[in-house]
Length: 316
Image (cartoon, rainbow, N blue to C red; front, side):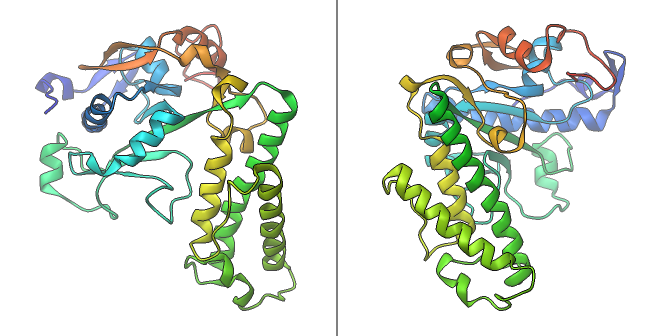
């Protein structure tokens, strides 16, 4: 078990910010989840690295950003999929949830978290997780190859964005027309109020037909929607298949593909920047970071990323 001296949990001023005891206990819980993940990473020789604010914290603070309370890691798509195959092997009373094992899941990253569906007092968990009473989690982001060819990139972005948005529209359809319950594609025409004035359900049915036509046209039937299964999950899996469709030899950059669907600016990074990793100190353990972390951080937070800013800025 990852151990901490009692002094670790004392209130502390870091970078001018007060980090109270309970925040420290949350940090410790996150670090224990990370240690449990590392067991799987080592067992199956999987590459991972700190990303986003966690990478900034590792480089700038040698740990978690003092005013932050979560941990984000990224993985190459192939390693991410290997982790999904062995997700049920994680220890520590944890589970790894994703669209690959949870039909109701609508995120396109995985979450390593406590194996519980409700926040409740748990003495065993409290003892194992350093007195932290909260449900903690680590986000695990798959990094996919982005086509180098502008036309292929444009097509991938359009198809991915279309499918990504349909996942969330599907949730709205379930809530408005099916009492919030999951629905299979084959049952859409049987839902009540199909002729509702807003036309939302019929529009969704038409969009689904268009999507199936697009997938058949551009992916030659390798990505399909099974009408017998949860439509929400089938759409999510189709989005994942589109995201992972570019081979490495056709790509110069990588990204977490939902960025393409909801961000205007391009957050992709050169694939070489994250190809290899090194271990660096992270609180009282270590975490992997990209060997070219400087390039990654500059691209995300700017040249002055080593200077904390407690105000609206380009970096935390």
